[in-house]
Image 1 (spheres, rainbow, N blue to C red):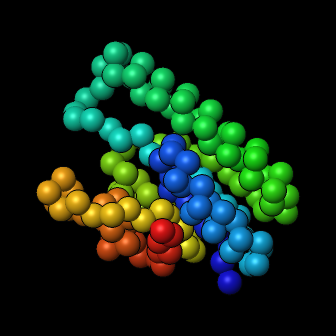
Image 2 (image 1 turned 90 degrees about the vertical axis):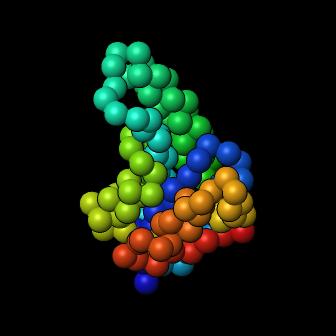
Length: 139
């Protein structure tokens, strides 16, 4: 049914439920799992100081994704799990990644909407609206 499943993730433990859901689907369909963390790009051009800042964020993200990758690989040994880190605007980068990687399904954690703080909706809401493929939101 699915060949490539994307799990966009922050670095919080609350994303693990979405990862486990994606892994269960992957076991059933023989799909690959792609963990994606997007480092949110701030403002315009990046100088040396900002590049160092993004590098440090990337190292932290890589450490967390590597831990998840190793743990879940031991729990789901037949599923290929790949980790990816990109820099940019989160919703846009998630959709771009789907197109480049031929993703069939996005599985992501759903958040409660706080309209006073999030006038354009949560990340999961934005992805669901603009994605050309199916999105499964996990609560």
